[in-house]
Each structure stands twice: as C-alpha cells, then as structure tokens.
Image (cartoon, rainbow over all chains, first blue to last red; front, side):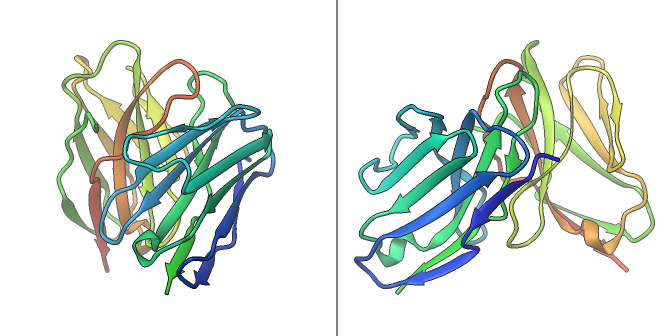
Length: 116
Length: 111
C-alpha cells in the first residue's frame, strides 16, 4: 500500500517553456503533499508543502510564482515550473502524507527535468 | 536543518549484516527516528521508524539507545540491491510534519 505515482518520469523542455509534473496518491488520501528537488550528488531539499484545498507554503528561497503548486484533490498535486531555465534542471520528487500522526511519508519515483 | 549525523559512506560484504549508525543527540521526546533509503535515480523508500523501543520489520531492524541520542539501522543479510544512500531523520510525532534530509550514508554492498 501507500503508493505515490509521479508523471512524467523524465522530461526535456526548451528554455522559457513551462512544465507540469503530476503527483498522485494511488491507494490513500494525501491530505498533505511535499515537493522536493535534488541536484546531482546532493540531498533532497524541500521546496514546498501543500494541503488539499489550500495555498502551498514555500520554503525560504523558493519562488512561489515560478513553482506553481496545486493540490485540488486528496489524490492529486501538481507542480508547474514556469518559464523554465537550464538552472531549473533537477530531479523533482513529491511525497504524500495521510495526515495521521506518526504515519510515514511516501515518495514518488521522481521526475528528471532537463531544460535546454 | 538536519538534526542527525551519519558517516558519509560505508561498505559491507554481501550476505553480512550492515549496521548503519546515526547520532541524534538533540532529539526531543516527541520526535521519532525515521529511516529512508534512496537507490540511484529513484524516490526515497521508507524503511522503518521508532520512538524509543527497538523495531523490526521485513526490511530491517532499528535499535535505539536508551537515552535516544543515537540509533542503528540493521540490514540483517545485505544484498547487492541494498546499495543506496540511507537517511536517518528525526521528525515530530504530530501531524504531517515534513522530512528534512541530511547527507545520509552511502552504503555499498560488495560481492
């Protein structure tokens, strides 16, 4: 159980275009979803936290107008990288939480974004 | 801001037990110890978590010292597929608290 599906698994886009990444919880309702990114040879860095039906909370240094997060349902959250640039190339990973105390976060398999 | 300290890398022979240490000397009474691992180019995989008692599941065992300032993740019979970066993370008990990842331990299982 507790499967998180992320799509696409990889995407290549041109500089200046926007890319949308989907994160779905397949067998549980994710009241909270977290978006992370990971640069090569580095650890995961939290970008933002989103609760269903609410605006996302962004970590310091993450531009909310550039990384648009929508969490419109208990099973779907999306991250849109707007006007992508080569420095946005990274591994983006989402995770979902049921909202039950002490339950672990479950992660998707990530999306490799390459901006040319 | 990670609250844990782990060795950057470890090696273990296939078939042997892999013991991964973690220091969390500033852990508070309402924080759990979580372990995740990340195999190359994949999302982190949940392994186990505990508060103060030792825990065991089908993947691993978690040994937490009595003072809770450190813990050890044990993979009893390591295989080549256990090669990954292992993250030890402390996380508040209540609600949907985020996970803050440190640098983890890169575990290499050698044939």
